[in-house]
Image 1: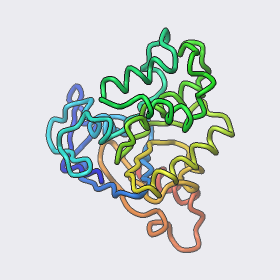
Image 2 (image 1 turned 135 degrees about the vertical axis):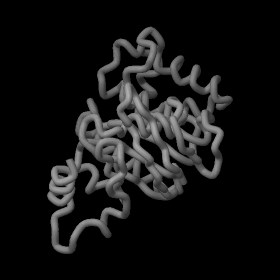
Image 3 (image 1 turned 60 degrees about the vertical axis):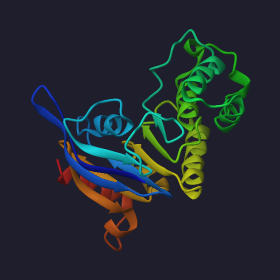
Image 4 (image 1 turned 120 degrees about the horizontal axis):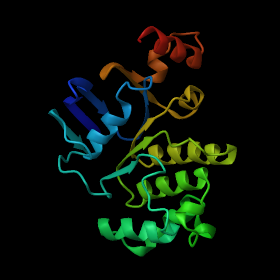
Length: 230
């Protein structure tokens, strides 16, 4: 489980995250929704411990000390990797930082379909392959909770189908999964819950099937809800 209490962060006098109190339960996929600038990435970075909050607390799987990849796996996009490193070297570096054994590197390569590209330099990978590598980094420590920020950007159709299956496998294994995305069709296929941010404030949080009015198409309801709350 991930828990935030009154989490707040401001930049240049503007609150990017404004008093967010939320629980993201284990064994579920929560889609973090909101327009550009709503605070989704900032909230993920605060949960991950990459940014320091102005106020509030974060607990992951009952612990307040973050930074252990075996506790929390973090995907924040495919760009923050050294293009000169090979796929295997990148994962080896992450494993060394986290005290993770080499067997998990091999498993992560298999889980993300990157084994045949292990010796390819990151700068020569397609965007989709770099996304898979960023996802592999998040999976490396077999964490109890995972954060994904727009992980579908650049994935082809087989990659999208693979990632859908991965999310459901993670949830079935008891992990807490939070995924920020703009793709509402994917939300209806993979998410159990939604969390809607508007101008840094948490406007809606709950199980998708309970929030969707009876008889309404889930995707259409999500689109209408997003438009009405901005």
